[in-house]
Image (cartoon, rainbow, N blue to C red; front, side):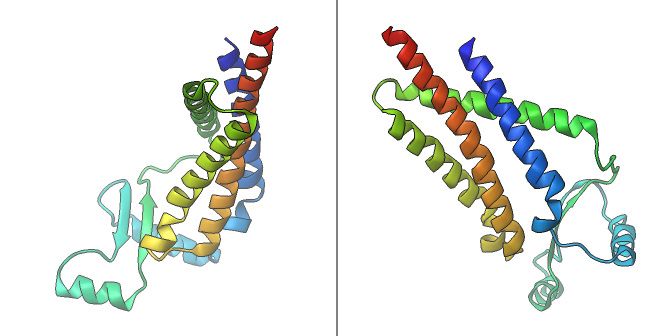
Length: 182
């Protein structure tokens, strides 16, 4: 039961941080184009056959290889149907994701047993947060030559969010240990 309670606490903290960084501070990590340009690109995107993630241009023909080398190149996460900008279901889904991640962190910490002290647990959760942020968020600029500003922003934010959630879960194990000694 304590695992569920602390996972909920971690999920709430992670959700609030996510809202602050990805909602209120959105403009820090993303580039935007003028409205007319955005609408022209949106109209062109309707030529894509279905929702998916596209790299444009892409293909093995000489024309595609040359077009890729000449640029511009784009990676597009495309949703053909659209959805409300501030869809409440996204926030619910995000909270569920954070709760599951907190449970997973708790499972990881539980596996450490009594072999690792408090400082070791902090190192594990912060190390895990750093590994996840570097591996996931920095992959785009390294492998796809994407935007470093966006990648560094998301890596920093994801490290903070995962780190705080992990520290809350690490605290659960400290309290559990202290209460079991009494």
